Length: 340
Image (tube, rainbow, N blue to C red; front, side, top):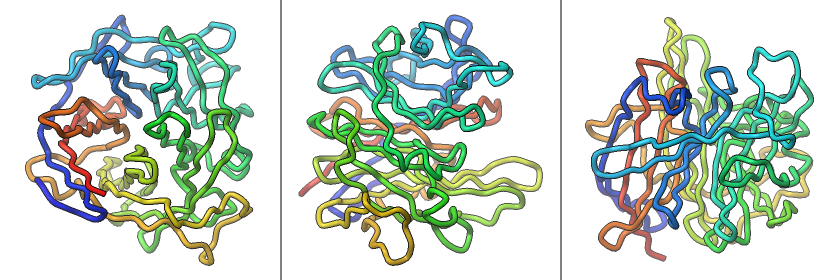
């Protein structure tokens, strides 16, 4: 599959892999992959699971990706400030981690990860910093509007550094309550994409119009941003994902990849609420994953730049299997060409 779409961006599918079912490392089952990043210094891939310590302590996996697929070599538990791991959902007290995104700091090598928060226990969505051993370091201050009005489990889903490491991009999966309704089959909601400096201060914020839910659900359905990735100083790749539940409780997923350019866009950081008077970012479709030939659709949540191949950068996407034996983790590898 190769096409030149919007803003002179071309993608070619190089490979599609499935991770074998039942894989475990140090007793921790592999799965729930919601964020990924590539370590150019070591050649390793780091993947964060959204398991809320129910199958094993909340964790990241470390592995290698080559032409034969993914080899997972170890896992690293996420730790709280006191050095302990995060409790499970069955625990009577303490913050239950809901990890969704992972990035390597290009300026220092620390790991940053997002948690969607634990509103039932008074914990806001947050960006955490840790070292390579999983030890907690200082958190990035979370802007007020990421917690005020945030819908549970629809918060900090996307995270990316700018290429120079100066800025940190964050995206909300779905609209804040004050920004209007979530996406429906009939229309898409308005969410926010924010640029922060390294101290967590808001530098700019932009409105982003989500797609409608991509098919009519028999039960539940949603659509939101599942990941973002900086393409250059001004452009971002935005991954949208619809989950559509059928009458038997099975979900089908419909994912699309867009590119947006913030140059000339309206800064909405000062707006208490978003409505139809705002001008959202202009987005251009890059890939509709429903239309990839011979590649089953999957719950794509993780996205990162990989090593260059034949002079072109590569883009890697991974799916969250939700620990469902019928939905293995899928890995897609693309070659990317971008012209200004």
